[in-house]
Length: 160
Image (cartoon, rainbow, N blue to C red; front, side, top):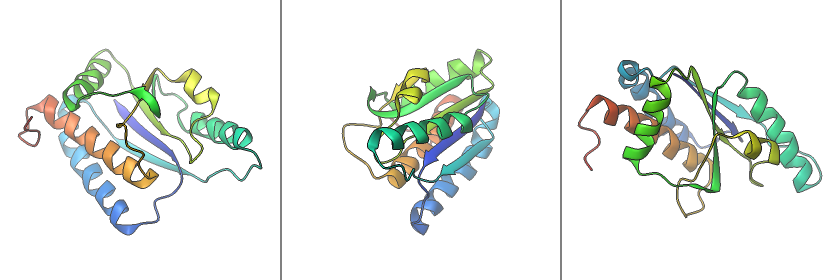
């Protein structure tokens, strides 16, 4: 299952980018046996529209364009469902096993997701009750994708 992370905003912090790259490389190896990969990361510029609603609508359209062809769309949303790492791994594994070819994980801008993204999302995922900066949310998401692959392959990385 091809994985797309489409995110509004660009990682400017070298340390965050380095951590993302480290887990993406690990996922490329560990994810193969369970059919995860390749991982593609698309960074989109924040909208410069004048109103919040216009910004969210503009970003939503560009996120959905980046997710074209994805049969599973997961929108990161503060009001979404929280999963344990095991449950998230099983969810992704079930979708991969059922023939889902592409999964898009969508990270909105500072104003959140537009209605089009939330309406088209198959799953709304919350990374927890804390508010995270976008860069850190991306680090957590990529690490959890890697962790899901290790759980599904029986790798000792995840010791619950």
